[in-house]
Image (cartoon, rainbow, N blue to C red; front, side, top):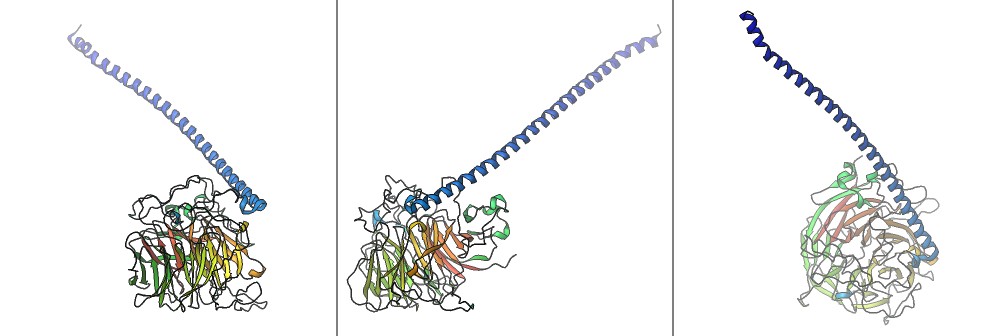
Length: 599
């Protein structure tokens, strides 16, 4: 063998080794490729299974939603059937014969507003944000560590001098409304002969109820007919015939009826919300947006703002808080007067529960926890009248439009009328339970009062009962606020049953009826009012919201969240366009509402 052949044979082994490595790489590549194909197949199968699971979950969700709707519809039908069969005493809360009496009002543990804002102080630095859950067997009062007693309900609102609901004759001409008349058809007289205080028990359930026991718990008790926990409150407005409330075409997240607090502001379309630095408003997706709202002034206080009220000329707004009544200029938001009684003990709280201007704007009446009504001359800051006689806290005041009479409501179960000119009490009306709210009609001929006994009563100014609004059409819990419409023909009332009701008072001699029920608040309704033109009903609630309602349809137009605690008082300006709110977050606010200019 030649040397060249020997050298070629020696070079073959590296080539063979190279080919062997290539074969191994090819084999490994094929194995990995096969594994990748298997993985892709497994991934596709898993994705298919996940899609099936998602479809099953969606179907289950649809079934659960349908079952929930059927359950709530059936529950609503059963409640209505119970109401029809047994009236108010047969509702889910139980018979009126065996339920505990509503709490009384007064100082300390008998203070019926003690639970409106009881609870932990949270981040407010003031009173707590919410009461603890009620315990019917052993209700607890306000926790001892809360030194500030929470405030009471809003006062009745100033009534305008003219009508906004003029009745029409057959030819379509508007005529001024006839004033309410007593049972004999006569107009009540405005003068008062000297008379002793007299009880005026009205007909109706529990008329012969015996003396009450010890004062009730501080925390107001919710009606047992509240919605099942976790289930949204079912709005049941009462639209007029031909105007059904249908929102089935809306996206699911916007189908909330009148419960506008259920809307998540982040998901609401831009044209259905208005946002500020620390407030927002949402507008009902189911109805045409008619209003816009904006913040004008924030009025800071050192304690809970119990009440707000505008002067008749709309230039000033008054607020009541602990020991102080303050008056602010509406245009600038600056305080112009501070009214404080210095001849009272310095220890403890003394909340001003109600304020109201005289019609001429020269005087401010205040009602407080010390059972005294004071009338202040605003320019001098001096007290011109002092009325005493109530045995418990004064929760509500209203100046009659004649400028002479002041109506007051107290936890002592009385409504009283006081004559500013003679500085005397001229009438006392005694009812079954604590009086939380009073309102005098725009023509100064009638006075309405709401009570812890769930009733609304209306008397002539000389003390004749003309209406007692209760029963199956009435509220199912304590009434905290009443207000007359601008023409005096209707009355609105707000209650701890979370509803507002509108009552027809056009002809009380032939009966009264509830013409509208507004449902949508998630908690107690603490204050109600009507705008000066009668176009909107306002309500403030423990759910921290303010809602505007259309009185013709019962639907909510908007919900404003502008406070960090209960909205205790709402008041529209007699000049229109503005309204004020007072809250447990130590603030009062002035807002502007106007016609919406968007699409």
